[in-house]
Length: 334
Ligand code: AHG
Ligand code: MN
Ligand code: MN
Image (cartoon, rainbow, N blue to C red; front, side):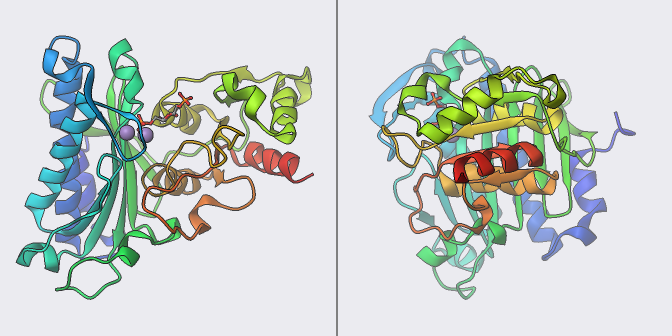
């Protein structure tokens, strides 16, 4: 433990690093921290509470089954963010339409939040780590007016902060406001996040590749060749790499932050743009990855430079240790 610094204290102490009005920004982060705590306590008893397990019978905008916890978590984050009056708009994986707050406080909110309230929901029922991931932008429309589509469709490079919560063997909140990445571990007995991972630096190279290899037949030849490269015997470059795939992007990338490696969700003949969503999955993770010294790409360009056109659009995603992602990009280009 780093001298028992709490997340709240850290935010106050580093206020000078935050680009915009301090009180507002920390109040917004408090909303996320609070919702994460409430969600954590529910996740910990998901196996016990009938209400939280299983499917709700509806599908979300992605055409995917909504789990009860997806819906619960979505309502929780929206409610917590709405109550703080710093946010004029929210986009969520679980909401087809963007949410804009048009009461007086909402119109004056300066921030836009894009969120995947539960990432890895297929892992809930088998007691495997899941997460929450969020991106925060400054609005570009005038204060006092309703948020516009352009506020939501900003390139990832414009993020002012991003973070994730991982509900794993311990619960952590990891975030950046553009000045490095710091991780806070939750002590559930007293309900406090403590700074435990200061200035996370992703190793420049690693020895783990992470991909749903069951999709191999649907990948391009170049992608297939890269997977073969990962498995070749070449001790000089740490190959063959170890294979690890949890199936929760946040958990797979959390491991990558700490141990290095490459995480991949490519396009395929079945899903040309892959599965992951640009705005509320790939962009926040890409911001954190770059801040930790790693690289995040769609195969040809940095994720953060993509100009979004749709709130729920997908993109191929390759993120992790810089040297490994560059090698992958080279393989896809040749
Ligand atoms: P979500 O639960 O928000 O729908 O996201 C699930 C995503 C991501 O977390 C994970 O990496 C990926 O789905 C796994 O997909 P496959 O089962 O296709 O490998
Ligand atoms: Mn997700
Ligand atoms: Mn989700």
